[in-house]
Length: 138
Image 1 (tube, helix red, strand yellow):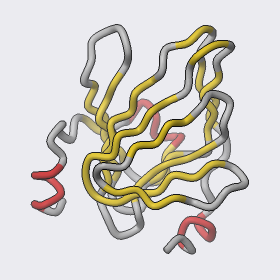
Image 2 (cartoon, rainbow, N blue to C red):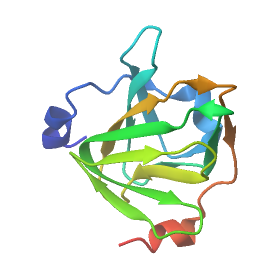
Image 3 (cartoon, one colour):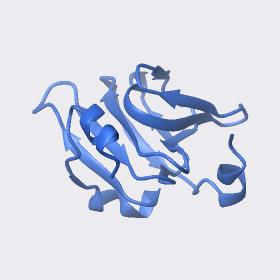
C-alpha cells in the first residue's frame, strides 16, 4: 500500500471484508466506525477492486451516502456514465437505484459508507461489473 494513501486514509484500513467476498472483485477492507444507530464504516478497496451492482431497498427513507476519503475510485448508476471519485467527493445514493462503486484500476480508494435509516431496508446484490466495462473507464 502506498504510504501517501495510508496517511490520507485517516479512518484506518480495518479488517479484510471476508463476509462479503462473493460480492467484490478484488480485496476490500471494512472498518466500522459506529456501534448502533446509523451504520458508518470506512471501506477501503485495493486497486482494481469494486463491488457488484447492487440496490439498497427501502419502503421509506433508506439509501446510502459515500464520503470519499483517500485515493481514486468510481461510482456508477445503471444506464448512466461512471463518475470518477476523489477525496472530498460525496455521493448520495437514493434507495432503489442500481449502482456499484470501487477503486480505480491503478489506485487504492477509501470511502465512508453511511447507511441512511429507513423502513424495511435491505441490500440486494446483483451481477459483477464486467471486466471490459471496468477496464475501459478513464
